[in-house]
Image 1 (cartoon, rainbow, N blue to C red):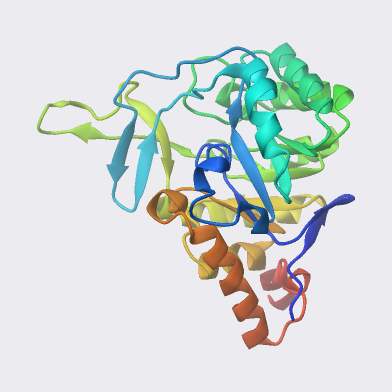
Image 2 (cartoon, rainbow, N blue to C red; image 1 turned 90 degrees about the vertical axis):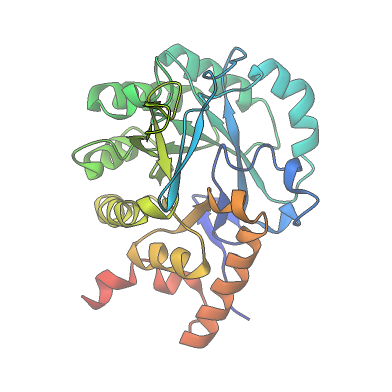
Length: 305
């Protein structure tokens, strides 16, 4: 038997396979396909203080080896979450983490304070990197001073584990990882989607209503892998890798590059069982390589370079 567990501080995870916010709904959407509690954790879809309608349609477009989205954080707000979603998700026997978003620093702080009171939510993912909203979002994640301000403010009010989701649309990802760590983050997750666009030659119009959107899927994996490697070398807190992870092999590459865990995103749209298959594949890989604990291969490429 191999050990797949990892931890963020004193928060333990049974395995390093999590789901990416916005691609897994609230977990219950996948109950008919997999045992959600078998996952290391689930990151719920982005939650805001007030309800958001999201961006106009069309807001998704297929691209070579990936997809673009401009959903725009559509959700029914924190009041609805507390009343209708939390009672359902708190029964999962895994770590349930809420991704929070805001237009202003005070929005993030208010959300963090609300979630602080929910006993079965042990962590939040602070999304300072969404490229699909007009205010907030990526604006915080691409400006060092703004990133520092929002992480510091949330840390002062939130007592659970704080994961900061970083934007790839920056020059130096290591700088932002260090800022998050310096202001008290317990972990960083990266990358969020890359800013991209698509044009429909037949209609002679942009494929998305907002022209640009977030690119995800296998197309971004080499960029994500490089940034995870850079971030993991820059900080001592756990790094969670995201971006184009479709197979156990992909997940292992991120672990070898320095990630302590990974998130499965776009792959769940193709096959809802991908995350479970990745857990099984990681076990098999470790057995074949003769490792008894996945922690032994975190950042392995740096140990052998």
